[in-house]
Length: 388
Image 1: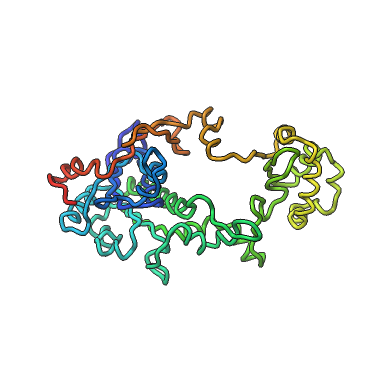
Image 2: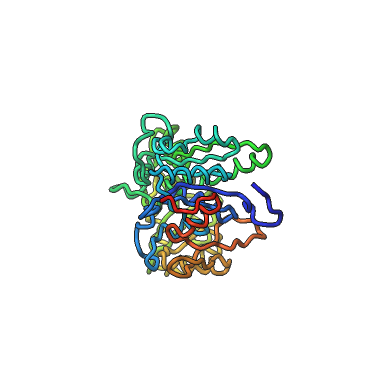
């Protein structure tokens, strides 16, 4: 690892990955955004199976476009001796190795942590799996929905009548972000000590961490939070409320905000002395009555007027946007968050990563075609013929 003063934070860091789908590719894309060289090993023929999830981005998969900019695609047949030799030669030159293949497959390929760390003590080894490398579920296949169910997330999401999964792959994202932060922590220590590290991320454990509020609520309160749709199980008023012509979504977080809400938004300061609603727990316990009171106050007001009052009172609020509206969100435009990256189908819009040093505007690299970099990368390790 060679530091480059004044450059991107991870300039000089090489990452080799055997990855597919979401979790590991998300981690390595964030590393690439910070300057790491990411060499993505893909299978012959189809490559990362996320390439074929859909064809909505000018013929490319929306998942793949999201997760794979700035990477180099190298096709290797890891069932062949030549492919495995090339893989191990690349790993030998890497600072970080990331994979989200199953624990058994990793052992068969010789890329499990114990094998690689023994051969390369300075390597940062990052693995992502559904349930972890040991325990009764270690060999159980895991996709995002499976982990959302096993973590209890689906049980508290949806309406009272019907549970629902979250609309984005939140288990994969949680695991990918912990793999990313774990790799960064290990690289910081490696820079001080030269030591490598083993970072194991389980999707179940990552999402269980994110379930901290409902888990504590249940363990110590005796009952799980109710499924409340877009409302909040433990805070009120918090959620959607009907106005004369539309709905507004708002959140009142504490008793001080409740006082302001009653006085300046509802124009009903007498409500502050209503014993049903003087505490948050009281408001939650009488949610249906509270909704009736708030919607009665809003019933004669257009949503624009309600929004104006909420903004002036500094009460958090929103209108329900769809994804087409997000793509032209005025706040993202005002903060110059969009960039254009290259791809096999031409230039595509991409968002800047959310957390960057303030003096860094990373040149986001193109999304690779399958095997686009195979010949050049293999030439670096003295292999003139593609071993796929």
